[in-house]
Image 1 (cartoon, one colour):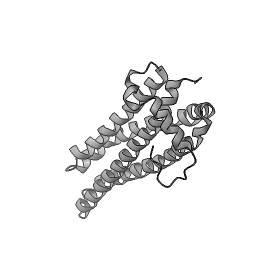
Image 2 (tube, rainbow, N blue to C red):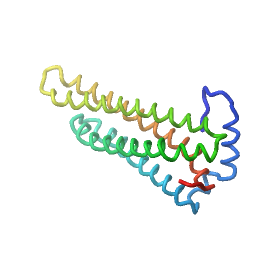
Image 3 (tube, rainbow, N blue to C red):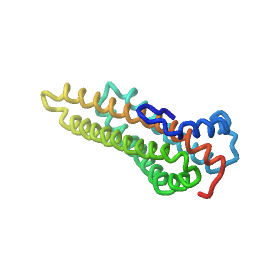
Image 4 (cartoon, rainbow, N blue to C red):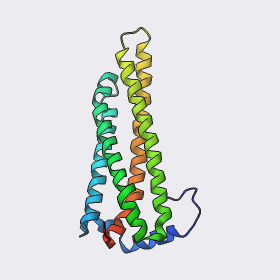
Amino acid sequence: MSSEGEPSDGWHVELERLLERHPRATWPATRSSAAGFWLEVHEHLRRDAAGLAAASTDYRGSPAQLAAVSAPRLRGLVAAMQGHHQVEDFHYFPALRRQAPTLVAGFDRLERGHATLQRKIDAALAALVELSAAVRRSAEPSAPATVELAAQRYVEAAAALCHELEGHLNDEEALVVPLLIEGGNY
């Protein structure tokens, strides 16, 4: 879990110990159904993000197709992310905080990550709306440049969202999966 800009308060040391006991390489063989489910949900989110990124690449030359293909993919990814984050924020994180009070600062960091992801979601949705509006106005004389600019803004916003999501998922797994492997009442 990266710690840029965070004071050293000891939670990173505890996280390192936790990861020594349960290295990432051992996770696929875990018998913890909670950890397995968590990793499965994250893999689903990664696949959705990859599909969104592929749409940005595959349809870059056709803003209308980009908007049409990206809209349901972005909506699906956003819905899955927000649903997962609600379960984390209101169920898992409080329980895990009680299980591992020395790692509370890590859970605070993950919750801040949810807020950052929401800003990226908002930016991607706004860019998609802008792209869709530009495509609808594409018959206007100044439209080609406007449509291309809107497409580029959307591609950048979607890429930023996917990049932020990948980092967040990795950080979250590093903290949560070992705790789920160690067990608890969830």
